[in-house]
Length: 125
Image 1 (cartoon, rainbow, N blue to C red):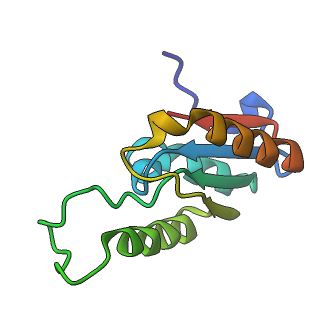
Image 2 (tube, rainbow, N blue to C red):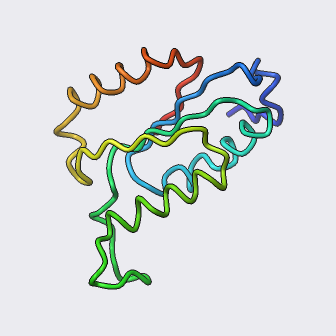
Image 3 (cartoon, rainbow, N blue to C red):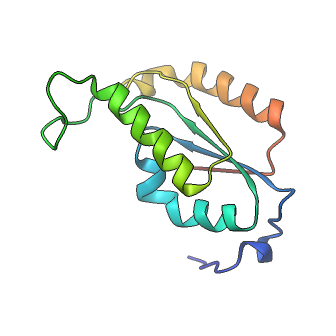
């Protein structure tokens, strides 16, 4: 593993465009928050694409049974993106727990987003 303490060493500047692709809300915080924060500090344009609402997660930790968990997690994701400095949030819900069955659809959408924005880097799980 290579530890990168300065993204500018990778050539990332304010002109760099990065797409982070995650399967569920909160994966960006758990797995890439440090990277996203460093990128925002050098004014990189960083977009986040999330492939589900995360509605299959458990409700037993502080989410009222009357609340729609997918909606709660979308709101939390939007808040996290603001804190982390994400330029743009894209959510395309292919269904939590159903991503394995939607690979061609996801590939087509990802390709469309990538080509439209001409990203320099793509980071995913």
